[in-house]
Image 1 (tube, rainbow, N blue to C red):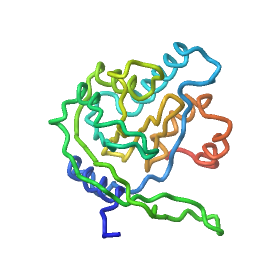
Image 2 (image 1 turned 90 degrees about the vertical axis):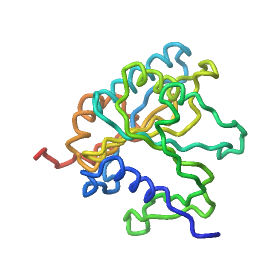
Image 3 (image 1 turned 180 degrees about the vertical axis):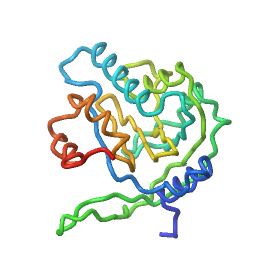
Length: 225
């Protein structure tokens, strides 16, 4: 396989392009929380969707407010599962495609796991990741935020509203990120526990029992500076 750019390193460069004043803070994420959005599968479609949108919107507002943020899209012409989806353009009805810069794939992509010493080590997927990266720096309006969240976090909505791209939001000044993976949940990360602590305290009941012990460890024996 030819030498391909790595996703994480490419995104770091793109963020530095958008936030040059914060390049010294662009470390890999150290702390992360995972929140449940839609809740129980037994809920009705409407209540599950409304809860997912409400929770995701709350988290977005707490993290970013009305600040300029950095948006990264991963765009597959074909889902990793093999399902052909074409080039879904719904997100560009919300944020103009002309605002984004496109970085053509494929890429190599890393993942992290614990080794036999219980230390986190970086691995590289063997197969190349066949997507394009698109990015822009923007300040989203309330209507744009709601539309993006609905397109990512809703189930059963009309096809002309669904967002197929993988979307991540970043705040450059403290390397804080937010990604809704679907109506089930989302990840929030930062290199500063001070950023995550208010979310952890305020929305602790949104953390699944399955993840709670791991999330609790982030703040054990830790006091805010």
